[in-house]
Structures are given as C-alpha cells and as structure tokens.
Amino acid sequence: MAKEFLLAGVVMKRLLSGAETDGQFCLFENRSDGASRTPIHVHADDDETIYMMVGEMQAIVGGQTKVVRAGETLFLKRGIPHQLMNVSGAPMHYILLCTPSGFEGFVAEGGHERADGAAVAPPTPEDIARMKSAAPRFGITLMQAW
Image (cartoon, rainbow, N blue to C red; front, side, top):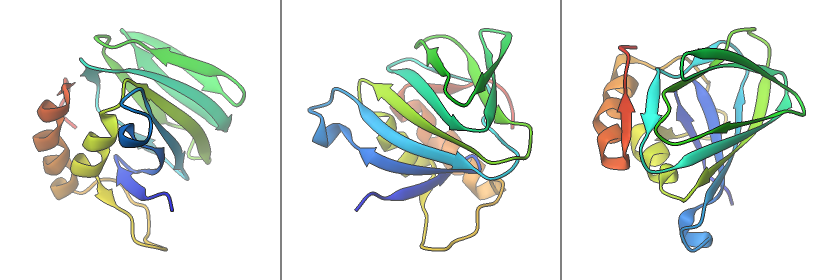
C-alpha cells in the first residue's frame, strides 16, 4: 500500500520509490485542499515534472511566475530556484515525477508520515525545522525563510 506523507501543507502519496525503479525515478500523487506553498528552493540532484490533474498551481521558476492548470505539465530543471503554491484556496491535485530518485527520502525525513484521517494543516515550526534539517542531505537548498 502506498504511504502518504505531509510536507509543506501538501499530502504526498508515494506511488513508486527509487527502490522500485532501480533509482531511475520516484513518483508521487500530491494534493492540497487549500492554501499551501513551498519555500523558494533548489534541487541539485534531481529534476521534477508536474502533471496537474485538478485545479491550478502558481509556480515561480527562475524568478518568472507561471500558472499550471489541469491537463498541463511543468518541467523543473535541477539547479533552478522555484516555489510551488496553491494560492486559490481550491483543491489542487497533481502527479510529481522526480528523476533520478532520491527526493522520496527527503519527503520521508523532511515531512512526516500521515496517519489515516489526520487533518492537513500548514506546517508547524517543528515541521519547518525538520525540513530545514533534512534538505542538505538530499541536495536541496532552501533559499528563503519560511
């Protein structure tokens, strides 16, 4: 059964880990039922591809604002600062593909496993501290205070 994690106010359901793909990629199904945002950050070791299924996401990529709507994709190349946000407050639901794998380790260490039926809320100071501590071990640089 796929595990669900909470990270930055987003429910991240791990569909495939690097252990299952020989390190080629990891795959998540993500959802946010309200306002959520990541800090501006950079991945040194992996690229991300987003396929938006429901709702829309605002992304700041390399200083440029992009809106990704249902049915659209967004490629986030490693080394480029970016921030992902649900500013509408409406539900958003998307697939996240990270290549190569490794990001799933950050999700597990920087976030926390979601218990069945647990409420989704903005990150607490403890959540933020855990994410800041885990980020460097996975090649992620958080560029802006939360």
